[in-house]
Length: 181
Image (cartoon, rainbow, N blue to C red; front, side, top):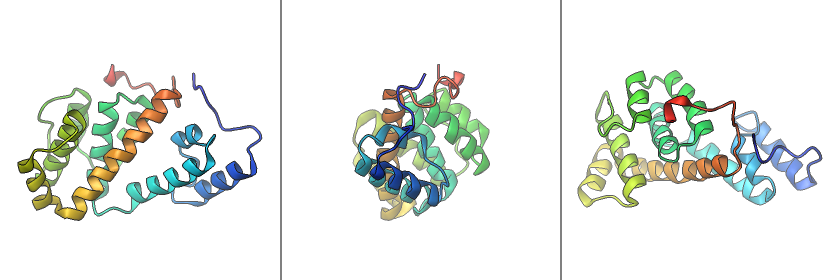
């Protein structure tokens, strides 16, 4: 059961942030924003950063969703996983890749070098908190510097999302993902 919910009577600052989120690309209040609303400025800034990293990076949607799934799996964030598994499949991510990420396979299925490097960089960075020089260089060679910056931004933001969802048990039990157990 969620520890927080949208306030029944939001403050004027919360009302503004909620209205901004609904007017944005998502068209709704994203679940983690519920956890940020007690600090309306955090909610405002985080949801703007999230919109940028979700919709306006140099990475194609399938690559962004692969990174988000790796992050959701790393943090065992059921709600993040459930929401982005659906989005990833709609974006064309191969179901084998999704299943391999869920199972924590060391070399998940990848259809091309761009998917392979996103999987590798995301997994190594989250597990080891840094990237070996060779992997960094390969990431830049395949994704470009902007692509690497966007990938790291996605991983950082979705770590915040996962921790928020997990701490406040947002989206549970309805978004429980048995493949993460």
